[in-house]
Amino acid sequence: MHSPPSPSTPPVPSHAGNAAGASWLLRAENIAKSFGPTIALARADFAVAPGESVAIMGPSGSGKSTLLLVLSGILTADTGTVILRRPDADGFDDLAGLGDTQRSAFRLHRFGFVFQQGMLIPELTATENVMLPLLLAGIPRRIAEPRADLELQQLGLDELGGRRIGQLSGGQAQRVAVARALVTRPSIVFADEPTGALDSHTAAEVLDTLLRAGKGSQRAVVLVTHSEEIAARCDRIVRVRDGRIEDAA
Ligand code: ADP
Ligand code: MG
Image 1 (cartoon, rainbow, N blue to C red):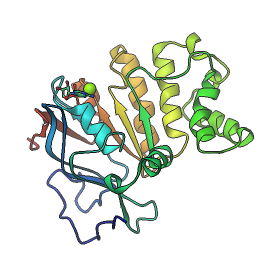
Image 2 (cartoon, rainbow, N blue to C red; image 1 turned 120 degrees about the horizontal axis):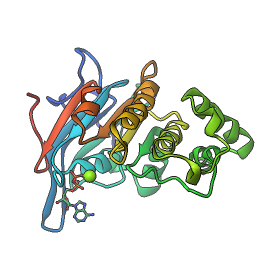
Image 3 (cartoon, protein in one colour; image 1 turned 180 degrees about the horizontal axis):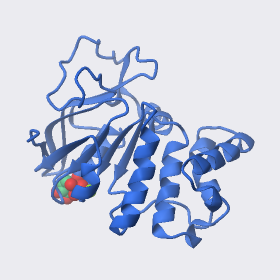
Image 4 (cartoon, rainbow, N blue to C red; image 1 turned 180 degrees about the vertical axis):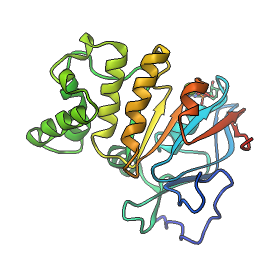
């Protein structure tokens, strides 16, 4: 059995939290990941506090997506630890120490994801797409459906519920993807270039939807973006180069 790290170890990395005293929600230390001869991540440290939004920036191929995949437990790092505080703030889980099934459960219950292309199912309605993570979590349809509609409503998207994804604009579809990421009330939303395919006005709307959802809750948002404009609206910017996180300027 893997034993979780005790609260006294390890020390807080230099990239932790924005606000003084803000305690972290997810913390990665010394994570490295190679694909054959390619070093995608080399000894990166990262932390995000509850309610904090962090933009990850860097040149193409610098390791941003790999960082996101390792932080969210989709990929396992070759070395290092990724630890997530439990919702009751009492204890930790080390993602690398979990088996595949447990990591899947983590992703389903504690994380939300938004990708550049929303990865929605075009033949299904917005409501049906937003319901999917709940159905996967074993929640019956009669409960999942009103919750999906409520989520859409809270994001100002009520009128889209009955529309098929294929009938929505790119920006509308991406906001539905945000609703789907939030419907399980995750601790952290990970977004990989969620606005990359949108014009800047629409991108700002999608970002608003994403960030607004974090405010007032303790939900953290970690997003990869190429847009300085988008990044500037986040609480903090982390820059990645050659698989390393550059020190804050
Ligand atoms: P970014 O998101 O910053 O563009 P990535 O994290 O996708 O960068 O990739 C970092 C490096 O790792 C790149 O050189 C990329 O080609 C390589 N890489 C990423 N994923 C894989 C993979 N599944 N197999 C092989 N190489 C990969
Ligand atoms: Mg990428």
